[in-house]
Length: 179
Image (cartoon, rainbow, N blue to C red; front, side, top):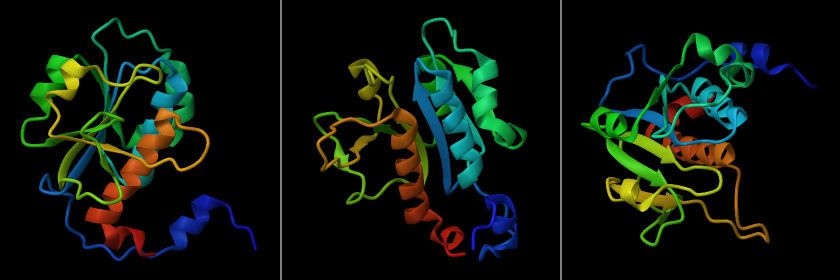
């Protein structure tokens, strides 16, 4: 029988310790120059779904997305997820101590389902149309892609980062996924 998701998950008991999340095992979601506020909001909402505390929106050009649309899609996640707008230089500074992993179809990209994602990870997705520039890719520790065996060879950026976020969770926080 159908049950709305909020009460359904409140009834579930998580097999997790009472320890606070440490920076030894942490994921931060980041996106470069998104053109659609709904995608930014969906990424913030995803962060709230999987327990990520920070989302970084990277803009070297003027940030022009309508925050009302971002917040409408993000909904209640805004109460427990911090999102920041920053430049590429600020991103690179903020990544100190983390591996910056590009979610991109770059020449060196590895299949996300067959490679080990780092424990301290900033997962960076690119612009909906242009992806990540090579100048930023050179700063990434690695890059991963999501295999697409179907006829459509592209994926919405918020959907791609959702898959990648859950793969990181599967690899590093599997106990949270066992409900």
